[in-house]
Image (cartoon, rainbow, N blue to C red; front, side):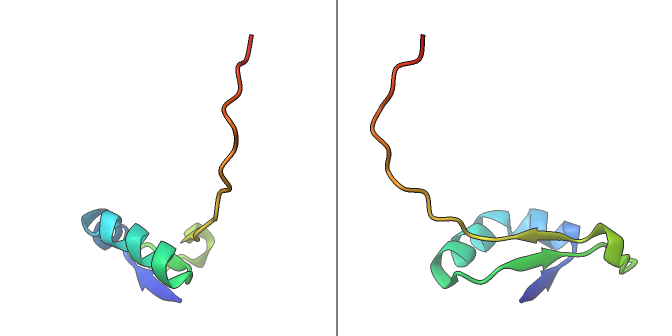
Length: 56
């Protein structure tokens, strides 16, 4: 699993999202101070195509 700082994740967000969807591997975003309690994980999720619905 790749690890990014918040600054690098912001800088490369579009490239990261493309890579996650292509490689199906999650990434972690960890603060510079390394506080493990504040880690974010981004994963790919396949969403099926649904038929259009009308809500009233």
